[in-house]
Image 1 (cartoon, rainbow, N blue to C red):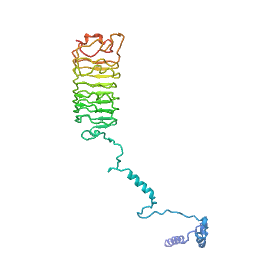
Image 2: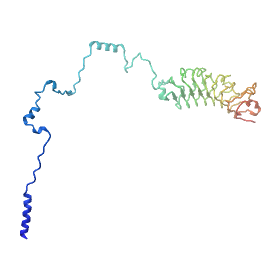
Image 3: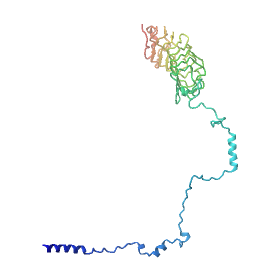
Image 4: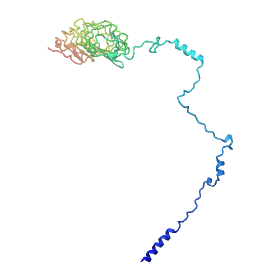
Length: 322
């Protein structure tokens, strides 16, 4: 057994002692490996390259530090011209020129307390809201104002120049003030005015109104017998709604515009009505199609006494029949 073990150990030592097989020679395609050191030196020799074949690399050098880039000095004549221009146009402390036109600014004109209207009120596009601001007068309005609301204030009077030159004004709403007086020309010269709301005030006399109006609400005032001029609404061909409730009126203001759709006269003191109040007694075929909403309730008038007055209407007025 000892002999066998020695033989096996001998074979193992023999296998380890045998040299590993030599791999084949590796050949490279690059010709640089066949070059000698002299050839390599000559390949990087730039002295023998002709000038016309040499490639020169151009680089931009970044200036160092905080040195300012030099600029050509201005011509003396140019400097003199610029100084003359500055001297010819004097400037104020804020930089503006005294020759420039004066503008009202984005906040609109100033009130009597030197306060911008659009800072006191709310201005959105061409609409001005001054509701519930304890105003006692109409504030100056921007010239482009088309819709003006000043409800629930303490305005007592409307002056002739309060809406002067506001040619774009279409609606005025002064509900719930204490207005008792209106100048005769306060509204007459407004060429675009369409809607006028003066309800819940103390007005005793309506001024002359523009014929362009389509909507009038003067309810809950103190017009009485003489508060509306004769034929006050005659030429208002586009008037559609006329609200005169709670005014102690004793008559229906005539003539009424042909295109009128709604006439509210509730809670007045109207006692009688004529046959030609709404209809044309000379033309029995006449029909007044537009006037569909007549309110006479709250008046001491008996509508059943004048049945001929409603023959041309599409609907009977609302009121007492007894």
